[in-house]
Length: 503
Image (cartoon, rainbow, N blue to C red; front, side, top):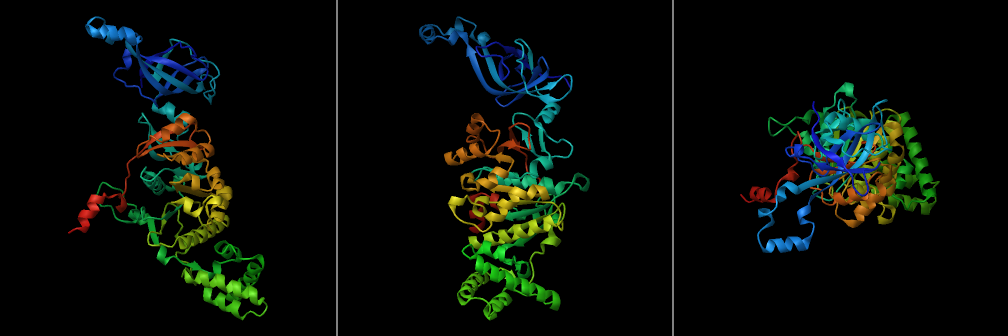
């Protein structure tokens, strides 16, 4: 395909140099509007140079002196005296990203400036995909490149193996984006490599995946999705350990944990011999009747165990049975919209993450991606409160890539999210954020994001995002594609809900 010429390199006070250049947009580009964010290419000394338009401005020498314009405008308009329109022209500044060597074909750093007068072209899709690191054959298509129609297809390994953080204020489209990501994961074929998907759905925004399409043009994912209500979630008592209970009751002393661990181990041995399954009430009875425990230790232990029992979350059997429901190419959605108690939610996630990571390390479940909404509630920064789930989430963030256990953390308050976890997310997808503390936190924790890109984040519209990190070779702005599946009920307008109720 013929390249589209848009301008020519010009000399300025500072360039062209090995970092940036300016070019005048020629008449040939009148039918090809050039905008901030467009990627361009031109021929350099070492090969094809790629740049991105960082700013555009207009100039006209007839309007350079304010006093002259004022005097002329007092009489006849300037347009009637001079051919002003012929002297107006547009100049674009572009940052150099790299050069594709004409010898090796590899992509490297620009260390020699382009020549003045060199023709500038719009970069084509194939070139952009190669330069930005997209996977056009087997990638996850989440949208289109800003100012281009280039499909943004992210390589599965580069995106998920080292974890992802989706950061945005409420209403910016972060749940919409994660739904698009789920669609892509559910649509993968066996030969492409499929993950099991676990979604922690705090507000019931993803349960529409389990429903038949409301329109024939939408894709049906209902046969690939299982929804488990938080009210029916149960922890199997035989999967409890003293360490896990210590996470749920952080004030428990090491002596108390040691005694509890001994009792649980004894009960597991008896279960193997008798084939009888025990529950939390059996553990409580064992503590009450054990004469080896110090009375004060026993009293404290019973207090912790009765507290956990009051949440009605521990039973004889695990529900859902995680080693059965985690299937490649399918999703398990834990719907916590019916669960008000934050501690119960945190305990569910503590157990779920601990159990899944343990199963994955033993290779008893397939590689999985855990998508965690409202991540700052379950893995807060140390100074912003305690959550029992923080420890295991931080462990998966540090070690999960070795076992192909991936995290997708979604948060509207990045400053409240654990810096340990955020630093381990090697790809950040940043949508609209306006809070100055969140912006500062993102700037400090996101590698490769510069000040100008960070300033742009606050003006992004819903459905626009900045991707930085391992998934791409350079920071890129994108438009998230439209969903292929049912919209969640929460996307309805308040007027529609009011009319439905008022019948």
